[in-house]
Image (cartoon, rainbow, N blue to C red; front, side):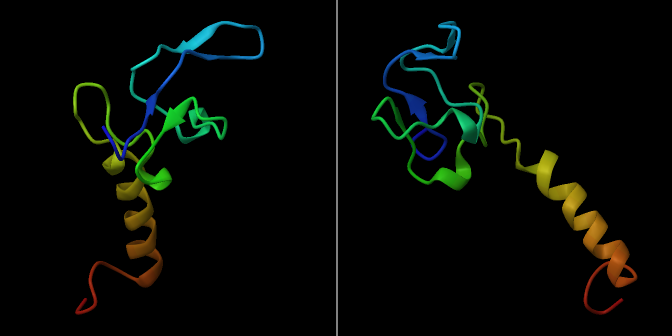
Length: 79
């Protein structure tokens, strides 16, 4: 959870609704704040893991790698 990030206080949206409870994991990079109410070991990993411990990187990286491979004419350097 240290890399993923967590709320050190309740995070509220512009209307005052609680979007993240104190102690809960951050689910999006956009939820990180620079006012000391959130913490994250490394911002690029913010929201990468769900509360259940499942990584969400494959949802982002897999399509990017697929497009990259198609544009190169196929997978891998040896093709």
